[in-house]
Amino acid sequence: MPNTPKPRRAPKRHRYEVSVTWTGNTGTGTSSYRAFERAHEVRAAGKPPIAGSADPAFRGDPARWNPEELLVASLSECHMLWFLHLCASAGIVVTAYTDEPLGTMVETADGGGRFEEVVLRPRAVLADPARAGETAALHERAHGLCFIANSVNFPVRHEPVDG
Image: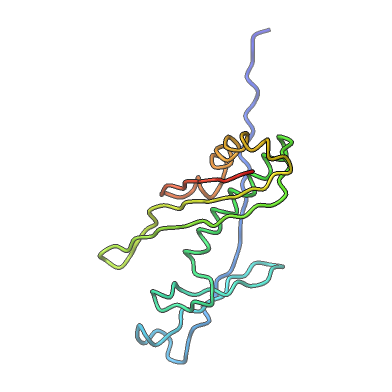
């Protein structure tokens, strides 16, 4: 019997529904650039709301999350979740994990902008520090599998410190 290829499985599709509601109308709507607040709420069913605003450089509230911070956090979270999964599968016990990612955005002459890069700086504490040499490959694999990193059009680098 000839080698017959296995039938391909249709890709799974996942949907993510949130609502974003502007709460910054101070009474006159957007009658001028300075007449409104950038305050908004991000909500999803069954979860606490996220208080959002613009970056303070764009008249936002520094006490609220801005979209740029949330993008950087999403990249960090996605990498972390894949890395932890891969470590568990490899029998590497991670007892703590932190990251202090840094995103760099540049404004363009027309007032828009784009991210130039995000650098993830994960630090994993391993139950067996002797296995730290194995984690670099797992970080690489996590990077390749990260849904968010695969969806952006700028470099996402990682500089892990594990042990």
